[in-house]
Length: 416
Image 1 (cartoon, helix red, strand yellow):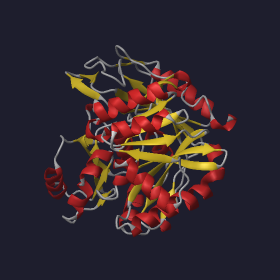
Image 2: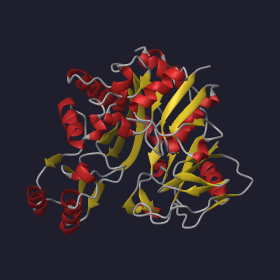
Image 3: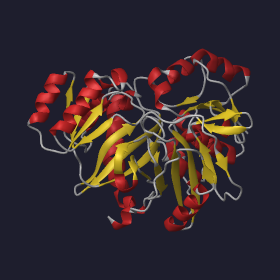
Image 4: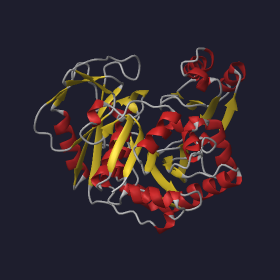
């Protein structure tokens, strides 16, 4: 079996590590977190050179990059230049997530269905535009913002406040120096991943994230409060998604000189006119990964090798029957300033899987250390049963300030 180094430290990376482990591979995770220690060897955070040295010293066969930031910073370019097998897009290709303006330009040039938009570098120009716009409007920080740089403004005052926060107050740092303002798409959301070698690709089952903090899709946007898969009502759109979205985008990326290889995430809105792209991500989504990978019955290492060998079209993805539901347990105060160092208590009797994210260690126990603390994932033959069992397991977990949504997977798109 092979040795894999997974870069990242959240629930997504825990799920990736577990996917490799399920097929017998030895997995290291950097920086990981203490909750992963039963499933992988946790390695302290490393810079690019230290990562390359670790790969050589420990005879690592494959590096798999989880989060967007190291991809945007060029870790793939650095490791590839040293002859290291690494799955993920180059720095140039990762701009499809790192710059929303770049992504919209690529979509426009490739004819991909998406929301109409305008890009602004000047606060006054953006504010002036919004005075005559119809509402709601979607305002996005151009750069990376940990999944939180999006505001759906219902009126001009809310839109102006969002612009000022991003462009003047720099709540997302330099990521908000430029903004993309889009029309609001009506419909229901789903997402899908493509494993691609740059030219060919295979797509996964569809999943559905729940971004707002509160039940009924109320409250501020978060990095994701839960997800379920598969979304069977999205299957009828698969052919269109592959032919109208993934194929042309990958073609234009090749023409642009930034061929995309790795995992490409398409966040979709299913409208009256069919699927339209809300966003692309340059990696697995989180928490969608925590429901998609547990259902994947094909070795992720074989998929990774096919990406590297440019033979992804030889791979057939196999999927387990049934459904997966994951519910995020978050710290009090999230997605704003959140509580930390709260002791996590987990009773006996859990039936399913926990993927740990924002946790640390205090003595022999785990404590909260991030906004999203853990993801409780259940697999069952039906969606309702998976929901029921995920919440049963969640009832055995406690920490001060714990918050979660009660309706993950309840608004099944079969009924939309």
